[in-house]
Length: 433
Ligand SMILES: [Zn+2]
Image (cartoon, rainbow, N blue to C red):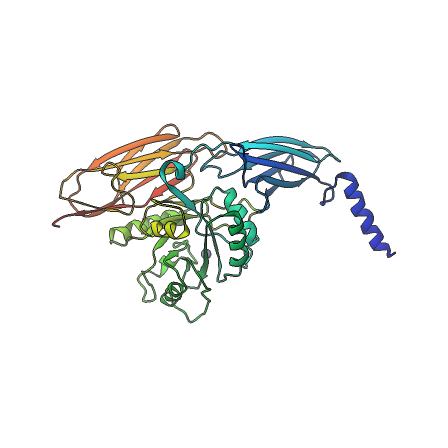
């Protein structure tokens, strides 16, 4: 027998004898995760005493079973499903001993469901798989990652490729998870996601934004989204005012990844566009590229859409296009007008000076620790019309205006940890104006 093969067999045998683990020097830790008693897709972040972290998800075929390979010693496990949106993360301290695989069970509790309470369903409209040149999440596992984030609709948006669609769609089908197939059209003039796409939109140095939009619509896209539009290098809004700029897109990312200066500048710019009468729909996205990194997390920012009927990709996209949506890092916003008869995206016709009654229910779910709502604002035509100091994790606010000119009203809210949300506008038209 070859000496090296013998050595290799010996090494594998030693590892197996030590604990049956496949990673030398580690033991298998199996975490069984349930949500209110039912096995659920989950993310587990293990932090060892020396500060090293390891992130694991269940396999897409096996919800509720998360496997980690951890070195002997003490670790903190953080177990999440929809953390910060529907249930709080749970932490457990464990000690791993050499030669002893460990198994533990963690039950999470659903705190709030915007779908069950209000009919709002979420998706993360900008997320990459390993089909992207800079992505790491295998397309089939992207399904488990999005289910673990507690998203109701899945999505895939790789840079200039639909190569991940096959494995992503088939894993989703097996799990009964509705998914939107897309692509991040990535050009020198800007980046756009198109929903849905039945075929690829290819990159070419010769194509203009209008060429890409036309090609995306021909490939089935009902909605085109301007991605990170104020990014200093890849922001499409930087092209505004130039002949190449095409304003016939539909959605604007106001939150991309962790909230940043670019997002704040996008919101300022979007307020101007809303004032000019463009009815672009504001969305929140993670732009996550790597399921094993915590720099961004799938669903960290997301978009909730209000459905009147059954949840399908078609009904979700149609309601999104109508503006029945809020973007969020955690706070939930049920924003209405005229005693619930008008919703975001609607236009209410009033006579000049007639009462316009706005109301909102706000709900905040703990992410890691208990947290509270801090402040909400009703924004009228880009300016703060009314500010509300909030306490606790639930609030109801109301405010009445008597508009004399056409305009729009939206609601913004922030929590004590900086997590925020923004509704889409309810529009007002003054009759006879
Ligand atoms: Zn991009």
